[in-house]
Image (cartoon, rainbow, N blue to C red; front, side, top):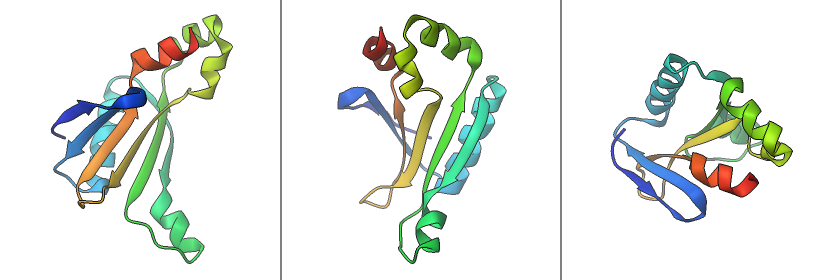
Length: 112
């Protein structure tokens, strides 16, 4: 994964030099090495195909760590709207692979 930019609305965007599947695998490996639990790996392209629709490769990884999320929800139960955390990996309109997620500080400010 390469360049990282912060966008409006508290979203972090990174461009990856790998495919969507490779980027997904690398992200999951990194998250697991940092003691995050992977709750789901959603393949949106596969879901679209099952309904007869087409979609470029697109994944959402849902992950978390109760040691980090629980204190936030203890202080602000509304944080449950944004937890567990999510990352989306997809091909953008230029056929580049992007990984996006919410900035942790933005989430904290939103709920505290």
